[in-house]
Amino acid sequence: MAEFSEGDRVSWRSHGGRAQGTVLKKITSDTEAAGRTVRASKDDPQYLVRSDHGGEAVHRPSALEKEG
Image (cartoon, rainbow, N blue to C red; front, side, top):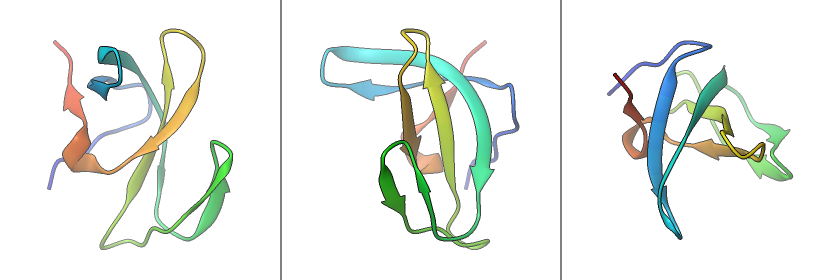
């Protein structure tokens, strides 16, 4: 499983092709983020990211790719 740190530049598939942004934090417990309930654990983390267009989203590590 890929690991990301706060501040990492990442990209992911989006409706319009490919989106890019920055990792804000690693989520390791159930919480509310990006307008939804996020189910996460230490063994199944998710990442809160901010796109270059200002929106926030939560993604599993498998959906993210580290940029440059």
